[in-house]
Image (cartoon, rainbow, N blue to C red; front, side, top):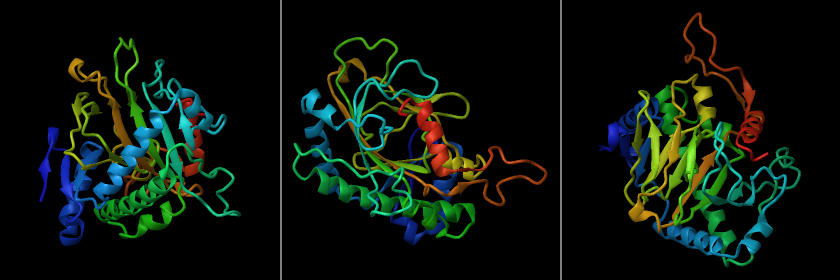
Length: 315
């Protein structure tokens, strides 16, 4: 059913979520407890859609800087449209990351209570079918993420459908990422400094190009190396708080390429699945030992997101 990568990070097939749900949930949950990461094959996101989205992203990032920057929304917190090089900085880091990215968020109808902080998407007119492709990919990621959350709920021994309402209309983000080739010394800068994700869970496509590493409990950096087309899943801070630290939001980074790969750009597409904005994140029953206090105080998903966006210099 499963193979392993470095240090026994679980590598499982999402098909087993239906055929052997207890074993699937157990392998996934234990990997999240130990490493905060897992790898999933047979995830159901069509190869054709993935390749189409990759090509649309590459076409956009190849546009002139002046054109791309017309899609940068000042004071938008980087939540929609384009974010140029030199802005996002890992929490506590002095050197900014070596990346640019595009964000697609959830489109909500007029009058929705979350519209005040979840603006409409913007779309690059220079790339045909960009909107249709990434709207389809967002919806597909959303459905796949809910399947993973069902397995997590099973592992936590709570109702399998518990998370369905917690993420409904959540402030989830699909990011198209470009790390450019490195032809010159980068100094203190790396492609993505060590950080933990803010959200509930992250689903990542495009991590086949080497560079993604996670920090183990004993302080070692180890590579996360999926096979082509596989999905990397990791726990975010919101779910770590909800489980009172049982599921780990692990520090991870994207290191600079080896000299023989420095001329290659790196592209990836993470989907940051979020709780709905008014969801109160507080330790689930059974996750706090008798006589102890929760590790973190309750906070709404929106307030926590804003707190963290300030820390990474996006607002």
